[in-house]
Length: 93
Image 1: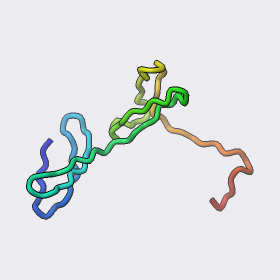
Image 2: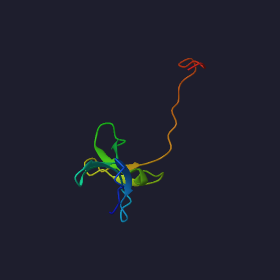
Image 3: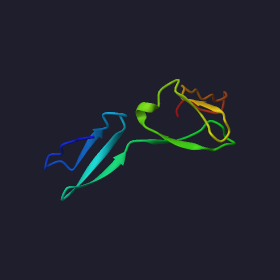
Image 4: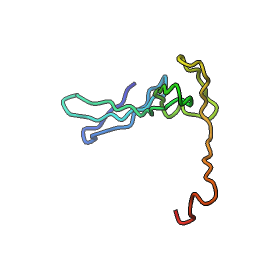
């Protein structure tokens, strides 16, 4: 991963050429910098298992699935819908 940072920049958005992981590089002066990864902690779908993993935004796509090593269940990124029964919401909210 390479990124030239101009002397007037304090931070830059960078991405790995190979795996497409993205970061914010915060320049601290004297050739020093801090890498801040752009990832999300995702709780698996099995409420009993409660396992979590970290995913880069470009990995979080509809249909992508993986098997939990603990409970052996399959987890899939998908579109979700929340249902609220009549009377449990009001139209002004």
